[in-house]
Image 1 (spheres, rainbow, N blue to C red):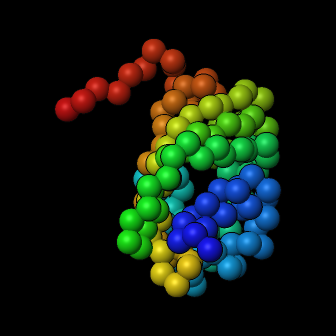
Image 2: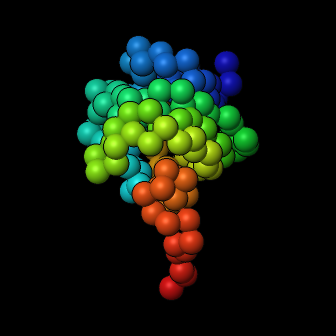
Length: 143
């Protein structure tokens, strides 16, 4: 079995197939989630399930495509593209019915075949622009 199996299965089974039960075998009980663009995620399996439910409630047709994977000794870096349609309310943003397409990168640290910690960076500004919450001409500026 490939070392990155758990990292890949999270995208394929949990997110794309909506099999939240798979989280129990893919994430450790003390899992830590780092994602400054998302609501705070509690540690562990239940925290990750709440995180997934938050986004699947807002984007029930969410679909990830794995664009690239790089394996390290105990980690996997996954570059991905996600698409979906905003059919559910988010805090401060009622459903718009608009589609999104954006990219991101996840670094997953593995131990005994499970993900123990992950760092995520994705185009949250692009998502908000696509949903009309921020004007499309708003641009981030480098310091």
